[in-house]
Image (cartoon, rainbow, N blue to C red; front, side, top):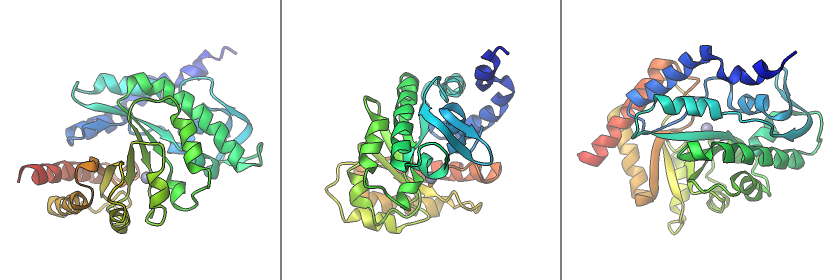
Amino acid sequence: MLMQSYWDRQMIPSWQPFINEAVNDMVQAGVQLVSDGQTRDPFVTIFARGLQGCRIRDRPEIIDKIGYSHPITLADLQYVRTLLPKTIKLLGLLVGPYTFSETVVDSYYHDKEKLAFDAAKALNQEARTIEPFVDMVSVDEPYFSTSLPTYAAELLGAVTDRITIPLRLHVCGDVSSIVPQLLDMPVDILSHEFKATPKILDAYSQYPDNKKKFCIGCVRSDNETVESVTEISHHIEKAINIFGKQIDQLSPDCGLRLLNRISAFEKLKNLTAAWEKVVYD
Ligand SMILES: [Zn+2]
């Protein structure tokens, strides 16, 4: 069989309505840094499907050495760019290699660290592939909050190697006990669930001399209840008291893809309105 159609499936036009919907909702709600919405698959599966050495059964499974043979998210990002007004920026999203190693079934390496570093090398190639087309790359490492490995900074460095655009690390969950390690990570911006876990704000307030920038989670991504503009603006003011000008972005705590579309839209809209309230009131 000719395999070209297999590799071209990322371009299947029937997928575009889902991307349109996610992107248009973000733009309509006033979001200024927009992603592709990760509509295709859960975020680990998107990359497991695209990397060499992986196959998808019930869960992604590693059956050979992990490698990079073709762009994974590039086509969707280029498509999103065509939908965006010129003033809106584009965010590339990568699964973190540690979270990848914790999520997949390993039938090849039997060595989590080795698996994670090979994944990091492959993800660095994806980062370099998308770098000319996006304004920022965000690496998603939720598993850092439950079991931060000793090699975390080195591993992340392998993903971000030679990337010169702004880099963000997103770690959801309670990170209040690993703040010093997070401040040493080779990224510009740290992104956390500050709304669901406000004690993370207190934890960072113990390190006032840090040089990082922050992305403040301002609405919960784990329940449908839409926070009011007043509630969100109070949360933003609390964050400003601690981080001041180091705040680079306001965002939902985590991705909103599991919420119903109306709640997700209303949360984004209220977040934009709360930001305007804080800036202009
Ligand atoms: Zn998250």
